[in-house]
Length: 323
Ligand code: CMP
Image 1: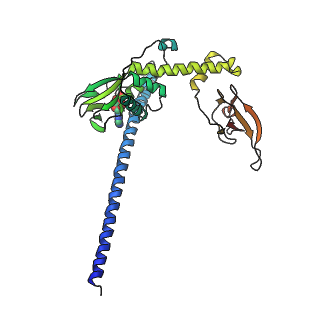
Image 2: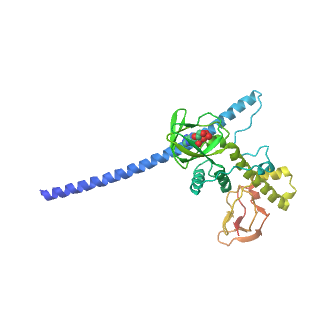
Image 3: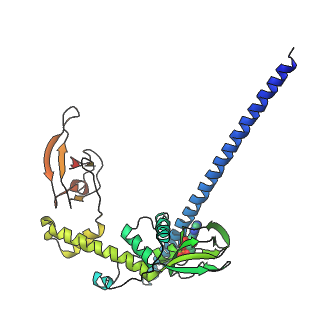
C-alpha cells in the first residue's frame, strides 16, 4: 500500500508535469500569434498585389471588348516610370527640390522604401534622390489622407503616428512609423486602391508624382544612354541599326560575378546571352567526368557568350567562369 509520502511524491510529479504542459502551451500560443501576424502581413501584401493587378486585368478586358467594337485602344497599364516623350536632355535640366532633414529621418525614409515590396528594388541613387525630395506634411487625428478611387498625386512615408487602411469600408490594416503608403496609384497609374485615415496626429514625408517620375525616368534614360554607348563600342554590334541597338539596350541588365564564380555550366539550361563589359572569363569543356575540363579560350571586354541558348539550343555546350 502506498504511503502518504508516495502520494505526495506522485502529486509533485503531476504538478511538475502540468507546469511543463502550461509552459509548452504558452510557447505554442506565442508561436501561433507570430504565425497569425505573418499570415496577416502576407495577406495584406497579397491584397496589395491584387488591387493593382485587378484594375489592369479589368482594363485589359474592357480594352479587348472596346477594340472589338472598333474603339481606339488606350495606353496599356504599366509602371509609370516608362520613358515617354521625354529625352535625357529634357530631364537633365529638371532641378529637383531639396528639403534638408535629420540623419534619423533620412534613414527612416530609406529603410521604409527598402521595406516596401513595390519600391525595394529601386537603385540606391534613386532612393537617395527620393529622400532628398521628400517634404514634411502633418495631419490631425481622424483626417482622411487618401480616399479610395481618387486620382493620386503623392507618395508618403510615415515618420510618426498611426493610420488605418480600409477598402470598401473593410479594415485592411494599421500602419505605424517607417512605412510607405500611397505608392500604388503612382507606380501603377491607377486610382487610389484604398482609403488611409489617421488614428492619431501624424507626421509624414511626401513626394509628388512629378518628382517621383522624373527620378525614375532620369535613371532609366541615363542607363539606356550608357548601354547604347557600350553596345556601339562592341565591334560586332556597330553595324546594327540604331533601332535594334536601342531595343537591345532596353533589355540589358547588369550582373556581377566574383573571381572564380561559374557564370554558365556546361549542360545546364541556358536562357541568357552575355556581353562582357568588364573583366575576363575562361571557357572550358568537360569531355568526361573523370577528366579535367579542357580549356578552350579566354574572353574579354566586348566579347559575348551564351548566344547558342538563344539560337534554340536547350543546353549550354561549354562552361564559362569569371576570372
Ligand atoms: P494607393 O493605392 O496609392 O493609395 C492607398 C494606399 O493604401 C495604397 O497605395 C497602399 O499604399 C495602401 N494599401 C492598399 N492596399 C493595402 C493593403 N492590403 N495593405 C496595406 N496597405 C495597403
